Length: 318
Image (cartoon, rainbow, N blue to C red):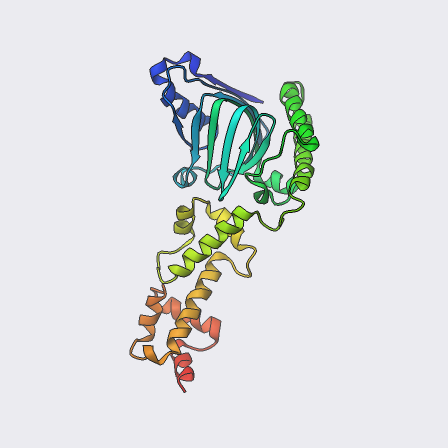
């Protein structure tokens, strides 16, 4: 195991804000942190890393934590975070979904998508870093659970909370195999707890995720002729990773690239068949809908419609 500890008590007051940001980002993921510059600002954490997991206990004064699109682009973090609120309150927002955590409550969020944390009053949490692969194996589709509160006063919420607190206290007494076994048991408890929380919800995708996907598709449809549209630019605009963007499109019949190409080709076909556009060349129409490479457009069109664009136009105008 590897231990990391830091406290602003060891730092001069005028340097605490900058040093807290630096140490927090180094210990977790790329973040932007806003704090009230009160004289008694305090922040500390104790982090334990083992195998591909980590558990951290964090204390801090009121602050706002952003995981932005820029942060994601400069980070390779690919895990889920599970927070257990111990003191104070925290507002968590991700994918148009928001939860309020009071003492004893828990929530899951994803490091590959933008999120905001508003830490209210003197705040204390335990945060578990769970590898994506492990989380998906044991929970199934954890993206559907992000920013949904697990009530610490519910029976299953209390079980998860007490199990995690016990694990945190006893972690140093366990060998690596026992640690991983206990963490897997914790995730299994979380899975069962969340099943009861969302049993009356649409489990295919959370509302926030559906809204995000709809916003992305609307953006693509409104700008389908923009040749600069690609996975990187769309991911940046919506504050998500390319990996997550691809997962959103997995529920469609097509990948992101195939879906966008299909939409562009359909618009080309529409204009080719419309006499209003007879004065426009095939390449002008192709360029209008985002195809800048003539040879690429010709191959793509023929592979999709088994004829050239010119042949398609002549047939449609008969």
